Image 1 (cartoon, one colour):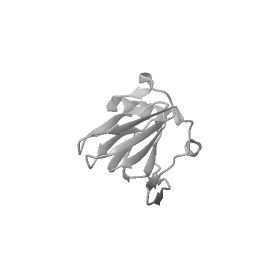
Image 2: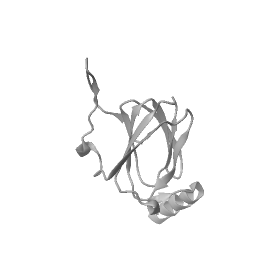
Image 3: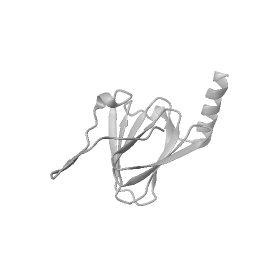
Image 4: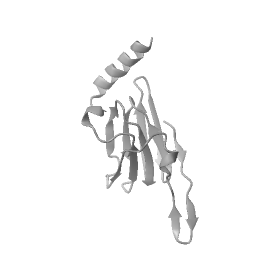
Length: 134
């Protein structure tokens, strides 16, 4: 994962945090917002063949966990922080405050065939990909 923070501008009217699509490492094709999740709820729990996902915490604290087929990595993102999820990375998000809001920007339109929904199958696929590179 590649955690970073977006620059916010604050004055007596409030905060403004811009996201220039040209700053993304891909051409954005889709976005969605996840909110109203109870504390401790996990979302995601899948991987993609093609899709890259840029996650931004708009509010709260969100634990982001990824697995690359060999090891887990985890980080907590807070308001204004972002992370990038690459293809062939199993991931989930755990919502920690009950008031969390997550914005996800994707590199592809929705396609159910791009999803790897079974963790054991994900491990087989990533092992096959590693074996093919040697």
